[in-house]
Structure formats: C-alpha cells, structure tokens
Image: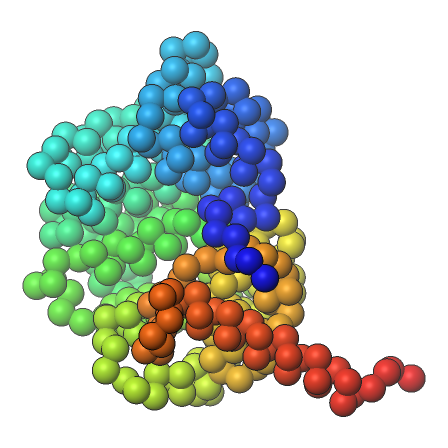
Length: 334
C-alpha cells in the first residue's frame, strides 16, 4: 500500500480547502469555517492546519481586505501570524520578537471580538513556547497541583472554560514545557508529571489520553541509547495508558474526528506493546493515511532509505497478519 502523508488526513473538505489556499484562493476555506461553526474541536484543528498552509502567502490578507467584517478572516489572520512567529522562533530569525508582538496583537483582537471562542486562547498558549525563560507573568503561574511547574496555567484555564479537553491547548502546554530554557528545566520530569496529571483528569473520549505516550516518544527521541527500546511499551504502566486510550478514546470518538497523528501514535504504542489485534484495528481505521511520527523518532536502526516509514510498514504488516491469523484460529462465532 502506498502511504498518503497529508495534514488533512480523512477530512476531505479540509483537503480541498488547503489546495485552494495554496493556490491563493480563500473562499473555500471561508465556507468550510462557516460550516464548522462552534464545533470547537474541529474549528481548532481546521484553523491550525489552514494557517500552516497559508503562512507563506498573503491569501488571508486578501480575504480580510475583501471581507473586513468577517470574524473568521480575522481569526485566520491571527492564526497565520502565530504560525509565522513560531516558524521564526524555530529558525532563530532576528525578527522573531516583532513577529511575536504582531501575533499577540492579532490574537487579542480576535479574543475581544469573540469572547466565547477558545481558539484565540489556544493561540496564546502556542506563543508561550517562544518565552523560553518565562519572562511574561502569565507564563509562570503556580498550579494547584504541586508536582507541576510554574507555567501558562491561566491561559489553559481560559481554553478549558470554553472547550474542556481541547487537544491543541494541552499539546501547546506540552510544547511549552519542552521548550523551557535548560537552566529552568534540566530534565523531562515536569513533562512526565504533566502527562500523568492530564490522564488523571480522566478525559474519556478525548485523544488527551495519549499525552503520556507523546511524552514517552519525546523521551525516546532525546535518548537513543536504549537498545531495548521496545520493551518500555510492554511495561504494565505503559500498557495501561495505551489500552485506556484505545478503549476510552479510539472506541468512543467519532471516526471523522480522530486525527491521523493520534491514530498513528496509538497504532505504534499498541504494536510496540504486542497488542497486535488492537493495533490492526487502528491501522485499518487509518487506511492509506499516515504520519511521520512517532515512527521517525523511534526507528530501530534500520538501513532503509526512510527508516521511519520502514518501521511503520513493518508494524502494520505484523499487526494485520497477526489479527488475520488470530481470527482464523478463533473460527466463526456460533
């Protein structure tokens, strides 16, 4: 099977809008966001992915010029400004401070115009990772849970009031914790504690049940010395989180709202933990769509041209083959 790597995944409407945006046309995106309405989870993910596609052009600027009264256009302008600031930060561009200031201005305009919308607050959480030394007061608030470090908890609370368990919001906090200055964060302990705290909230039906797995992948990515890397996923604590995500999110969530990134991680953790029947079910749900991660970060020393993809295909083949043989051994149901 030829794998398809596309940010829209199974969201065909978003795929069409991305193509149009990349061609410099904004009307399809405008119609898409209008239909999305206040479905906050979908609105959050669609605006984020569209912003990535639009950040290298002025297509959103053209939209704002033609429809100056459109809130969706204003929100997308804020999203694009945030994406540009984050890219500049990653590339250590000297204009990062100016881009960050502009992005914050755009975000606050959107937040004041639509106080009910969680997306502007998600944008502020995204910008928090630029403040690696936690110089801004809103990025060093104390948490009620003593094991968690000071951070942008007030911003997360603002998102939660509008959209509990917003996926991107929690992942932005995770990115913030990983980005903190090494002198402030000498280890991944705070990130591990954050993952434990997230699942302790019991977000049933939410992909946030996968946050501990994302943390584990980050640990693997930062330390490749463990030759027995796969064994960690078979440990009872890891399996508990993995199976909780499978039964509490994958089996309960609307199939159209499961991101390929989350499906990819769940498929990996199930396969690595030798839960092949469950892994096969997730691979089948993914269909031809795939994500580079976590395979690129956990690859096992393969000499293949693309070791991450080689590992993905190996895991997929092993899981589907095992599931088929397991079904044959079980025989037909009476």
